Length: 81
Image 1 (cartoon, rainbow, N blue to C red):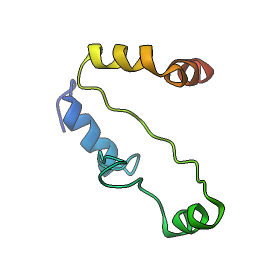
Image 2 (cartoon, rainbow, N blue to C red):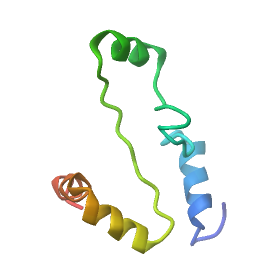
Image 3 (cartoon, rainbow, N blue to C red):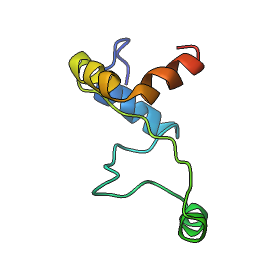
């Protein structure tokens, strides 16, 4: 990636290549990306907190999620975003 203004896909690929994120997966169809140890905890204790980052294809999608999912708003505010 040499472009000063990368596309969304290039930006995401760069994050993956640098080890900052997984590729996009669907928790319903692919499962939540977890280590074996985390899976064992989930099976025995019933819960593991895995942070999810929602990827938006356009602003209207982000706005619709924010209207429907209050934690999206307050988590960002708690981080100072």
